Length: 311
Length: 128
Image 1 (cartoon, each protein chain N blue to C red):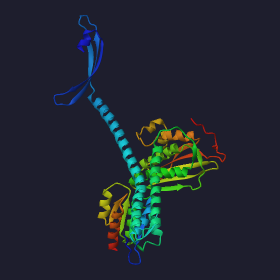
Image 2 (image 1 turned 180 degrees about the vertical axis):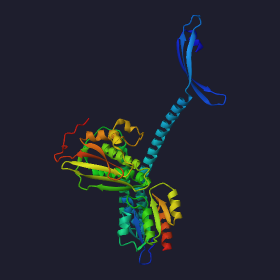
Image 3 (image 1 turned 60 degrees about the vertical axis):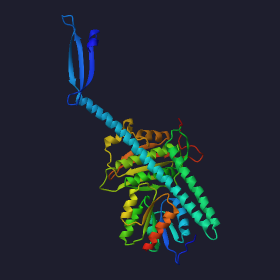
């Protein structure tokens, strides 16, 4: 500061980090400005503030935020890995079992050739099933442009449920599903709709994470809505939301969860709106909350029930 | 190698919600000289007429609805002490320790070898 004073600067502001004799840290905030008195050497008036507590609090908050983000990403990744492993292990198990059976059949006296061939055909089917799981997962988490195709929401929902089953089991969620068999098809981006369903399911699981005095019931339902739309509902038995929170839920602010696997509610809503649909929330009669979205059906001549803009 | 049992063949009931497993396991188990039936859910097994005839249960753990361990509890409640071989797609090794400690014959991790399955089934059937 003395050098700057020599050069004639008149306003200073510094922060100093000091190590005290007892090794503790202090943060000082110093401000000073020149006062031109009668004598030549300039004088300075200033103040020194001990801002140690504020600075340490800010550092702690930053650290906590980045740790939370890191843990959140790891939890998401590990949860995702567990889901993928679980899904892929099933057809792999089929492959190994079918192959074992095939060897037994070939070693039989006389060899059971037709049975052995059937085993091999099943191996091919299982191999393709494993490949399908990978494809579905890749599609679910890739960035791509909005593409329209006919989508059966019941099937789309079933796939998402299969992916999150592991997560649900681990969180002791009791899953009920009422997916309509005869659901009319909608025109939509299958992957984006699945991302919305995933978002709603994960929010429902999160809402019930501290519920211990009642079963953690999660209901997912698809049904017709009126004559020309379909509705998907996710109902939880969690802590519920008050009116105020419900109004703010879809604001961008509420999507600050650093959840790499999912998307926030405001993005979910904009995806649904892009499908000419609507996404809403309502409290349950009992504990918990219900989220639902509805989308117009694909009308028979291939057009959507209303115009669909593709951006 | 043929292992024809003495008539009648012991019945192994397989409960697993996964299609690949339900299509492959009974074929292998029949090569061991045993009879095999599959069920897509614990509820389906309980509602079937095969509970009393089952000499050994091959049970998936994680299933939608009633889990494998729930089914085990229910059977214990009904005093149906059927020997159980758990099969699971989870990688959590501590599951095996836990179920063995509570009296399961074995807990195999998918994908498991035919040899491991056969040894587990032999151990289970000796208990009956």
